[in-house]
Image 1 (cartoon, rainbow, N blue to C red):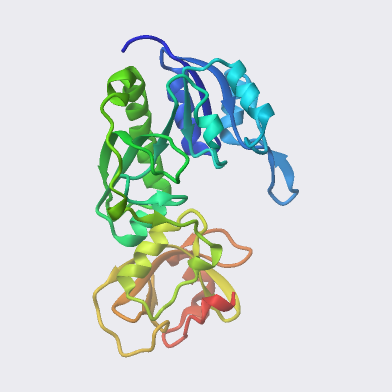
Image 2: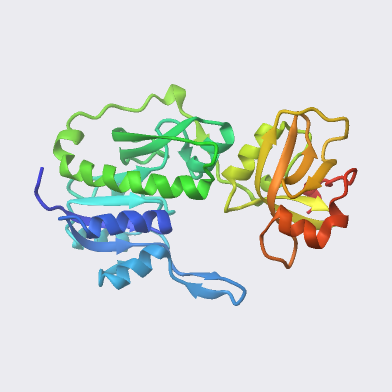
Length: 320
């Protein structure tokens, strides 16, 4: 359909802001933008607007920041906008069933996975961590369950060995914008031909706890390398170095045996810090010491070579 739709958009982070920009550039009319309330951030803990709010203000769009949508007032406010559809992208708040039923065409969600694989909070990170070779975006008609609604359209994307979660999110945002606009242009046809997800093959992308970034050197190097990519830039991976937390920002695995213990430094030179794992070796190529900037290993070793001598053991990061 080529008719311009009246859209309410709900989203919070950069990934969502990319989709808001796509809607701003489209023929559709954005009647309101919803984003999470401003949060304290940075060392000064000053209130900071979300990327979606900042974009809405720049585009002179009405912005609404409810702390919750579980109230009659929220239902009334959304109803006043008389929207055809509510588009939700990484909003971060639960939409009650009463809210989902207000827009004439319901609510669409742009989800960064190939549903029903990786429902939940961290689909991009979990896909990389699990070693998936492809992912994508799903345009889903929302219902009260967690990412359980029927999928209207999917677009796939290969996951390369160079993809961090940050880079993959960027690529998926570009894919998602195109898929969203295509879905809105064909919304009547798509809504008339949807099929339910197959719950029997669903997997869940649980929210990532910071402590999951602790590198367990008894694991296989390939698994640790995937985790480093999956958790970059956030929440990040780390290990213990003589009582200090060493952040591991970039690394790759090599299929080479060693005689040391798990976590023992095998070698350290400009090519990387090679660490023995349960299987193979992890080669750290970029890292960060407390109070210092992120550095390539070549630069790091020029000032701290003594801390990375072969035989030194990277300790139990779970203590950090």
